[in-house]
Length: 431
Image 1: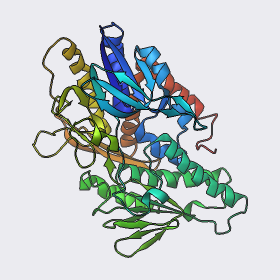
Image 2: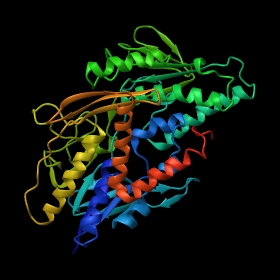
Image 3: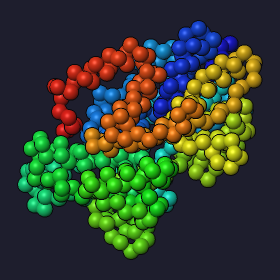
């Protein structure tokens, strides 16, 4: 009977793994590869801030799982994992509802021989009062598009004379990569919207406030990176508040632990992550306080050799005995590459390799205004990049993701299509 590998989660890591295994094990009929996701399409999560600002049309950059499976010899199943039976080696999928609330797909079970969990993470609001009710998170395409619609609504109302103040206030909680990049992208969007005639709200009247509980922006990156980014944001007119913790969110403002009130008509929470809650209740698998599954260096869960987990939803030892692999896109890519090899070895009954994380640096985009970051390697050490060169390296990260999914020829065609489309489409999504 063919070995069945079920991959739950079609994010960057899960989709890349399914594609790699499909091209090798699936194509040669050595294993049956099944990818499970709750949606029909994929968009690279680091691009969601551009979707929110309108700089990226998600309908043009999305990937369809069914088509990707056909082209790369894996099967796609629509569904959301809700449970696990390790003794019977089946996962449980919750019922899928259609737009009218009717049952599209009933509850069902899916058998596996090897199970890979790659469901990513969601934003952690740390239980802050009012955050879930009044803030938008940027975990999914739908959330990013919701923010864009709300942003555009402000401009359209002002353009129609329904608002007389000519101002808009946006507050972003969390000055990590998402918060910083969103702030810069929104500043760019303000200029673009005004250039298209929606100028009742002038760019200088979009008030953007970036709030960070830690002592500086981009706390996970070196000071030599975060310092210039902070200065650039202030030059763009973004108000940056560091060392400021949000204690409550209301419909019209953010209240800080220091007693400050930050008025905001649009609010985004981009601070902290946690894995989906259901992972903490998966038939005896070990998880940590933010629901991440505990895994060994082989990426196998601590309680079951047949179950693997990687990416943001897994707590993998970093090698020093205390820290775990950081929740970054490059970590998920490296782990997907390792698992593509490891699962082949598992079919042959060979020992599995252990994961060793390599930090290749970080790049932060400040929209068209700038980019900054550092690249790390064995030969060159750590090299700081700024400006045009950093921007080109940043763009190349997405192209590398596309090449892993589509291959070089199709990625080249996508790049050509993007270039041609610039002359026939608005620079900002206006609907």
